[in-house]
Image 1 (cartoon, rainbow, N blue to C red):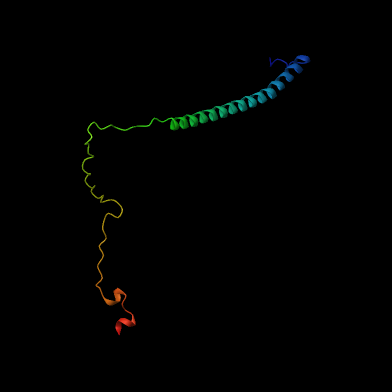
Image 2 (cartoon, rainbow, N blue to C red):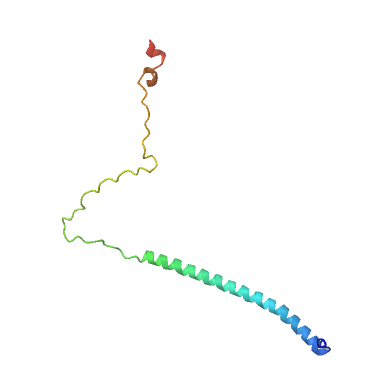
Length: 118
């Protein structure tokens, strides 16, 4: 015994038409649904960005002025200046380069003109 015979007549035509419509319309509806979802996400993102921007601008404009710490004693002094930081021996240019000093001569001073020889 093999598989049952395929349907014939109006039932078969109705089934074929229904399956074709389901396939075509289903893909179209899926594409439309994805387009609507992406557009909704884009609107949501733009709205969130706008709200964050406006919120930060309002916070900047409505910032409360800080008077700072009020000294209880009017003779308050800032204290001594801190000690200088030790040089970083691994820093760029921290190791001095020793160069031999050239002896001072007339040629080194640029006095090698004819006037100086006369």
